Length: 186
Image 1 (cartoon, rainbow, N blue to C red):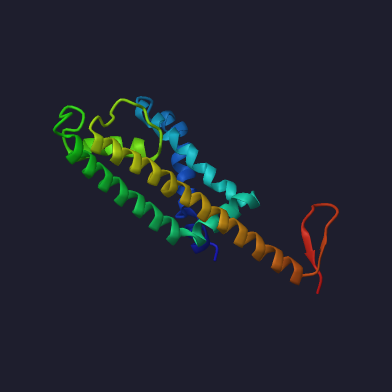
Image 2: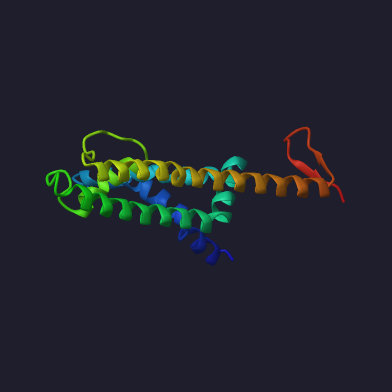
């Protein structure tokens, strides 16, 4: 429909992002004192989401994330539980020895994030034997829990590529010499 089709296009999220991205360029023509609108130019970065229209690899990555969404969310939830648990345990183990570094559990979460991701800045570290033992366990478990999403995504890529191969073997196709697109034979 000539009108409703245009309205549906206007309210699509990517069209709204485009509008927000280019609007700050035109607003100073009508209101020259609106300098704060320049910050809206940062929305141009969201236009990168359109790249999936032109790249099969980005489409494949989107399919993998969508198909493995449940497993990734569960893994992130387990990582969050592990973070809260390790921060709570290290707080109780180290609060008496280092009240400035571990004043409360949310402050101990900084140590938990740094230890679970095995970054190890060294600004906060346990000094008691129990705290060091908990830190070693948290670092070892963190390596595994943060490697898990990579394995999930890799298995998703394998599944999607196998599906694509199976579907290509079932179809007989000819490739156009001019554009490189597949032409299906009937």
